[in-house]
Image (tube, rainbow, N blue to C red; front, side, top):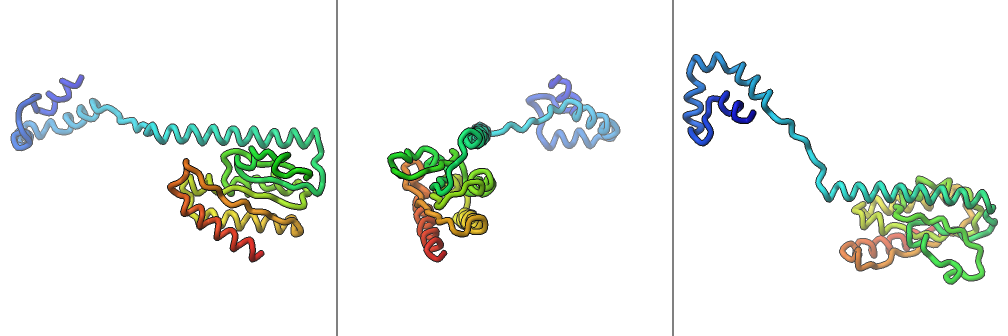
Length: 212
């Protein structure tokens, strides 16, 4: 027990000091017992289990849930394509939840639209699933919205911009005649703190897009 461990160390609870404890240990007879005392102290020690901070655990749970939903959405895309072959010459929408929730009948009336936005996605996610969400469709134009999750999540502007450049290069390599329409990142009260960074990213993407 704890009392036994304290007694074995030669220090009575509530008494003594570092100096007197050191003096007692300096006694030759006690020095002979030191290896045994060390082993006893180690046997009494309780293992320290590192617990994940609540905030980190909650964040990890949100990320896992978002990934699960993303996977379910991509599975739904495949099932939908299996039932109805997407028409050629459509407008393809890709990106995050802003695209996913777009009411295209009102926003793009009279156009054939394929919506392949999936919630919580970063630009890197769109690039990763490029074959499933972009390459397989014979679209005349691509409407792209993503980046606020990236910047709001702490990714550097340079990294996010490089991801967007990679997306454009992928499209031009696979579909050289397809136009890309970049929708600027929107301001949001929930992400007002990084808004200046987001707005600067919009200008950077605008300049890049106009040079293509």
